[in-house]
Amino acid sequence: PEGAITCPPGRFCALRWLLAMPRSSAPRTSRRWIVAIAAALAMTTGMVRAADVRLDFDNKERPDVSKLSIWLSGEITPGDANRVQALVSEAHRRGRPFFAVYLDSPGGSLMEGLKLGQTIREAGAVTVLLTRSTCASACILAYAGGVRKLAYRGSRLGVHGASERGQETTNAMAGTLAMARLASKLGVPDAIVTKIITTPPESMTWLTPEEIGSVTGRGV
Image 1: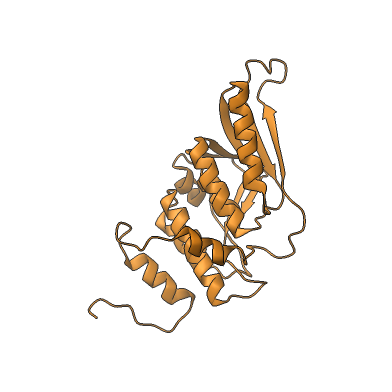
Image 2: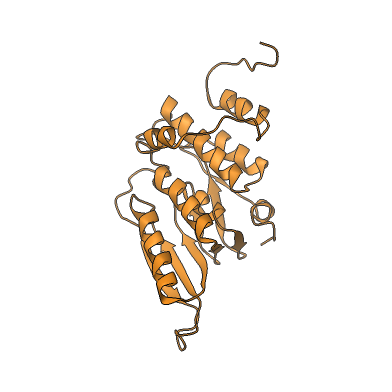
């Protein structure tokens, strides 16, 4: 048909297919499809330890008037989004303002990254990368979930595609597209979405300060 994209199957054909479609007409990603693909995928290999997820105060001397923040560090594994949601609920139970999610993670479960991005966005939280913090791979979905995104100078943001048991399979490429769609929906610029799709899972593209600034919309 006219306008059809023809190329050998693979990462670059998938990129052309995704970016050729207007966002308004791109096919919707069903939740069932995302779960079926992402449940089998890990954005990095060898993940065995859950992330450390905790609630903290911005003023430890006056916790009664302090804003509450969530700190997530370490590998993203199944259950982390539920832990974040439980802490958001605890902040609401205390009647305290909920401010930010601080991230420092090398990545992990794609499915959990998808859930974290949605959970953080629904909570209305700011996401923050402090100096020397790293947010790579599936972590970018959690970071993109922030209604505002802050990155301090010296922080790192890295992206690449998904893998299935360390291999770039058809399911892995479909998972990469699911990640790209959600990243785009959460406001990640097209140029960065392109890097997610075009960077092989065994590699990592570290964004420049200018590129991080394009994600935050505020600079670094």
